[in-house]
Image (cartoon, rainbow, N blue to C red; front, side, top):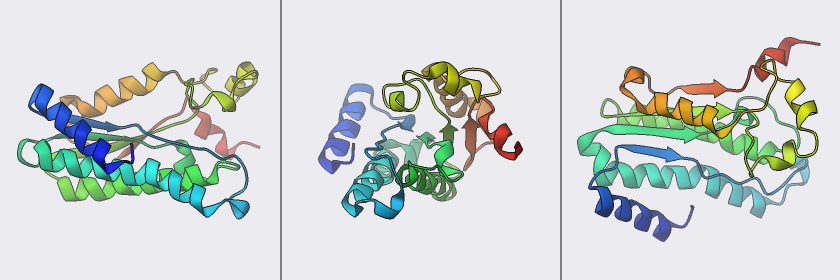
Length: 189
């Protein structure tokens, strides 16, 4: 995702196939480490930022210049609740997602009024990417959520569909938290 030649080829292929790019969803992400950031290898930190933030900027720039600058559209960046508050053991990931939330605001300001740019901040969603966070203990993990379950890809898909639709036509620069209510527990205890 962070390979610039790949980005150029992907945008070019979309333009060749469809003649337009109305919606961009930046969903690439990596989190190759688990542990305190005090001991984080800085090359790993660079990889996390390259994949989670710089690639999103690259795709937004390419899409803007290829189609959206003249024709409008939407961009949805998939951030994380880890970008909103401290996230023990996945700190580099959280810091990168905080950067993505601010990138969303920067792009929304710069691309307005032609393109709307928003982010989604999910909690744990049952994907291969998040498997290590719930595997073998899903019921225990889900019990912490007021909604009583972990997220599923359709939860994020529905939020993305809303943010790319005309129903959200006056929303830009925002981060929609899709977390099954987990943040409601922040003040408990």
